[in-house]
Length: 292
Image (cartoon, rainbow, N blue to C red; front, side):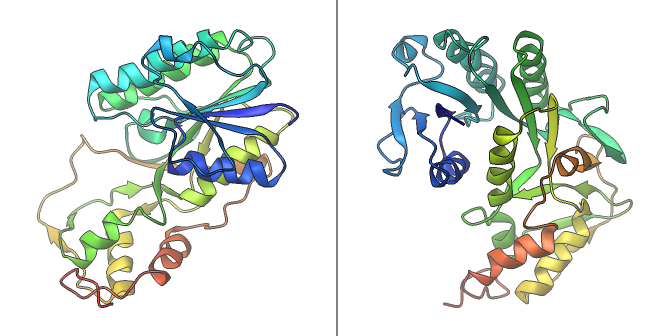
């Protein structure tokens, strides 16, 4: 990669991507509303993706773009403004977007798939989002791929890792319940593997339009929660006497396409990933408090 990479929405995952790029000698710009907190190895750009007026002086040496902002609220309006509208604002501010940018990477979500009753899904599966977030992300994917031949979509599963330990805390505090009945499958990716996957796709000579970014083992939620409880020395979650709701996603997301491109996750399943996270934490008492 000869020119610079712009990471738009440079939060925790974006910083991890940037650090990987910088280690390979890449120049990286990090765009966020308040850019003063970025590490010194990332060139800050203070801008608001929802305000086109703040995007009128972007650098001219940008060669690749990674778009992964976080909406300020989980509302339809916030998602629409930051993903669909904000992305369009940014690409209009980059006159080279459709011609000289080597690659545009949009970080989407496996939420676009919706409910598939435990079946395997891949990049060719019909998407049936269950809620506005998946609908807006899918609409943004379609708009991007229809208008930019240099674009690629990465559909992230649920991200976990250092600093993302709410589930671990809730298991320790016995706040988690498991629906009885048929298994509800969940999908995840360790944050370091998520960042590495973006790095991998940026380095590919040829890319497919869409890749799922997920580990090797979709697993039933009860299986994951029981394993976490045992690992923490906590009480296993109680089972509720009702079946899972059809309003919750339930699918097994395949990463075969990404693996076929040469990528292999460092944390191949939840045991490896959560195990590494838990090993860095102070012991958790059964009531959820830390022992140290």
